[in-house]
Image (cartoon, rainbow, N blue to C red; front, side):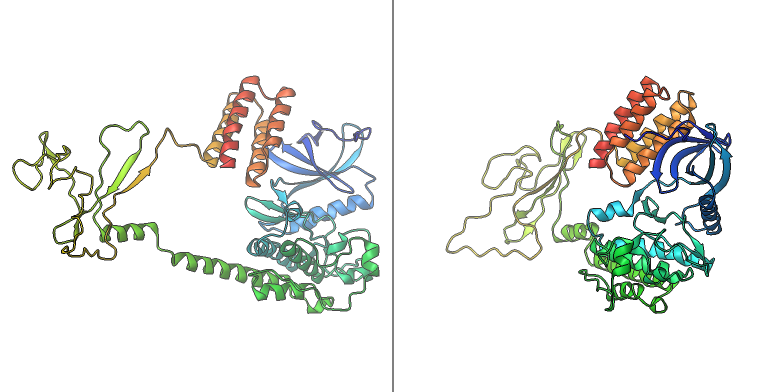
Length: 490
């Protein structure tokens, strides 16, 4: 079990009398990322804290804050604040406060297998768009990896500008920073920071999403330095993948940086392929006749008699009956629905003694209402009965629409009810706003990524154990979470 270092930050500590640290949600080589609560603006945040000798490392985290703040893009992490402080344990800490994003790392998704090509292209297009915006502002990310792409309800987000550099800066830290499988070959020679190295990483990312593995097997700096890649990059072979995407991936992986496309060009190719795929799907769906058109065809082919089954059905079902009756000429005519008035039934055609509709009477020329008459027996002199194509057969068609009890809540409805319980608890002063927001976001993370709800249950239990959640609300949330689980499974 890992024990915290003496004097290290712990849950419950507050930085600069503003940022309440709640729980660790990530850890890097130099820093720890906390789920925090901004007590001034009453919102959840991510707090990246560096607790070390704040020499060169402090300059790195400051550069990250400046580079990220310089890049304003909806699909990139957003920086709110940067500061340095002496903690309550007497240690000097530098920190960056960022927008808290709930989601799932792309690396976790790739472990499950290759992504459908349209999904992979959509993620790559988002990343390429962010890189294009960064490059236009003179920023090179230098660590585009599957770990640094987060899949959120709003789409893919590019994170961690921790080793970002400005275009033209000396890249003299080769072998120390970056993730080996994604590092462009020219970075091994110590060249200046160049946007083309990010495009190479984008090509690795796209190849990995499409195939489930990076294009080259080397995973350490030593293996990459010893690799001799004289041939062309490997080809992407995925069924249905547009040729333009395979060609783009090959160009991004070119060993010569000048042969690679720019990030903006790559984003355009990816977006165009995605748009073409959506247009093709819409065109294909338009060729399928809608339900209303099918119903119209049925109505024009033969008359339908809508009747509610006699008596009250215990199961709440409504029957739709389509009946047809053969006439003497051999054609079919629909039986007419009963018309009632003043408590009497309209008599059937056939004579004054014919039985009223709904009261079947046995006889050679009558049949119970709602049942097809028996066709004349075939004989040697009988004329063949021809049925016109599209006319209903003599067999009754019964469609049942079950309506048993109240409808089951949808996933959105069940989640809204869960969040309403939290809001009501906060309004009554039973729980703090940061506790309600914390539980709400853990649930959102689980639901958006179709994960198991165990982390939400554990979070509710932990909050109850620490005294932040009263027993009544604790039970109500657990009960509602079961409803959410049913809706999620459905």
